[in-house]
Amino acid sequence: MDDSNETTHRVRITARGPKAKIEIDGQRIDPGALTSYTLSHHTGEPPHLILDSEHLDSLAFDGLARVAIADVPAPGPAAAIFLDAIDPEALERAALARPDLGTEPHSLTKAMLTQLGEWARGL
Image 1 (cartoon, rainbow, N blue to C red):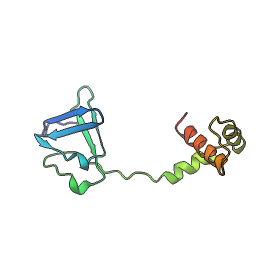
Image 2 (cartoon, rainbow, N blue to C red):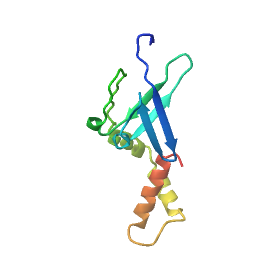
Image 3 (spheres, rainbow, N blue to C red):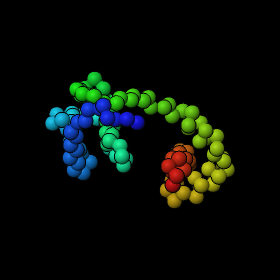
């Protein structure tokens, strides 16, 4: 990709703990407008800063930028594929063997949901 005609901007990120202050060309980006940011830099290419915002109307930036807006995919299809792959017998065995299985009503259902969540996260 030829970036020779692109304008560069001065970006400053000050991160302390879970909070970060982002400035572009000396103008602070409203932290309430951002949900996350990603900074990447590959050898031979200019750095790329991606700002994620759920409130695009409150995020103002004046300058040249590559903009990509992506829709968050609906979780239903991925969840259906995951659940279709579950062996009911293995789920029941794992849930019944959990040390946190209680005796109150719906405790088996709770244990199964906890187990499914752990499996989904690869635990």
